[in-house]
Amino acid sequence: MQFDFRNDEESLEALCIGVYWYLYGTTAMDLNGDIHKLLANLAEYRRVFPEDKPFIDELRGKLLTKYLFKPYTKNNEKLTWENLDLLVNFLEATGDYIDQIPHFRNFNHNLEDCLELTKWFCQNSEKYLGEYTINLEKYIESNGPSHIMEEDVIFYHGHELEYHLNMLGAEIMNRIYREEYGSRTRKAILLPSCMNSNSKKCQAKEDMLGDVCTFCNPKCKVYQISKKYQNHEVYIISHESTAFRNAKKEDKDELGIIGITCVLNLISGGWKARNLSIPPQCVLLEHVACKNHWLDEDIYGEIDKDELELKL
Image (tube, rainbow, N blue to C red; front, top):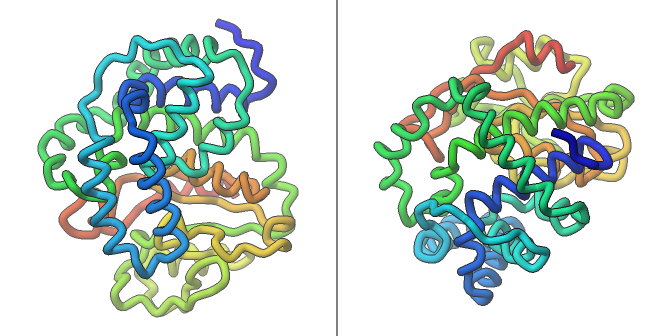
């Protein structure tokens, strides 16, 4: 199967569009324009005023559950440019795909190729990546009701195909941006807060790009990585949405980053960095670790140390 994509990034954009259309197209076509604007504005307000997050999350959770959270139904509608606009509206309303949206708004390739590429992906992703998501459906069936009316209701119920898309997307991004990452004079490792051995007692100090370890606990994964890679900048990022918030021009010109994150944040995190002209490399957490979305209690995040070493 051959497609006339200009480069690997355009092929990733096409696959993302096709997968999201496959999963969310019917809901996107039914989304009321006023509801889209309200949810999109609330998501933006939440990013600008994080101190109001509890109130905004409660309101968005109710609206998302009522208007966007619908059972998957097969989408037989043609993907036109008008329908792509509706899909982008849906993605914007969820608040979970903000960093993908600029790529979709600027996309100008044949939309039929998006669907053909997605068809191929659907036929093959289970074969090669299904072993990593074998328990996903059972887990969501058992725990899904606990996230109804919650702000993460769409994110939490992500389809198996989205997990596979992010796994492949991370590999594509690593290849696309590897050379530029290697040319940067500064390198940073971004660690999720779940790798902190005890976040409640953590003594990390706030810095411009994230929290910085003060080496209070030798058993902490953040401590260990910060000690081992002292020629790198190491930051703790509490949430993907806060990453690079205070990045300055010199950061965008000099920095290359290794981002460590959960599967469903790989593409959005990679493009978030790329949209700021910071070339990323991605390393996947070995398992989910936080109670924010997945567990009753936090556990310590783990990574494949050899994979991190390889990316560095």
